[in-house]
Image (tube, rainbow, N blue to C red; front, side):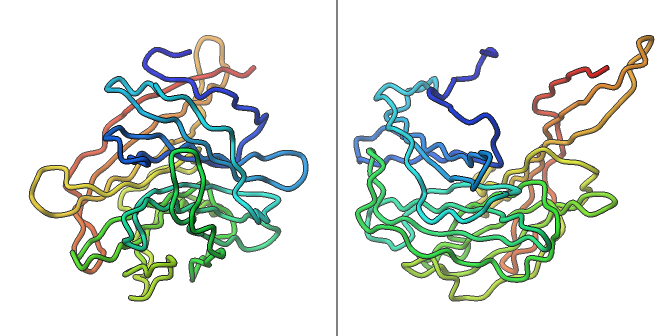
Length: 280
């Protein structure tokens, strides 16, 4: 196990097609719980599953054990091109809700969907059950290389906004784009309309192996900042062996969000972690 990483036990998939994590105090004991979500890309229809690691300590170690893997019901995709998870109190009843997101990758044009599970507890039970899959409108990509979601109340009205990030993988250079669905109701429906798609500036990758999005006040200014993460995949030549090496480099940038949803860059890109592998 690489230094600094905690292994998630009982990972059974031979191949995955997306995933994510979220953190929340699910039982009100003052300790954060880890929600782990993954898409199992088996030989037949895919499966979306999550599990909960209870009571994280200050080092990020799960002290209260893990639940079993729990299926997200009605997972219809045979191929996915990304998935993500977020946890927040969507319906404002004082209980945490789980929101799962997926990119369906059929023959032809892709599509993005999310659904809400209400009243998530530390055992993975949902007191309010699952809502239906909700389509993210104007999804134009035919090929994606992952995507992600985040939740935040941008305008302080008590209703959450949904942030959706996707990586478009056309024949040329990739694009990272995001949009915001305003004013989620108790069932996760967008009631205040959607912004258009905004390009993440200076997206340099031609191939990606992952992407993520988060919203936070990074400098205590009282304004929301948008964090974008990507894994860049590229091939280089290694001399004197003249072999190709695939390099994955994860990069991040931060941007300040205005009320329109458009963001301006306030942080510089920086390398977070890189790994290499050779092929002959």
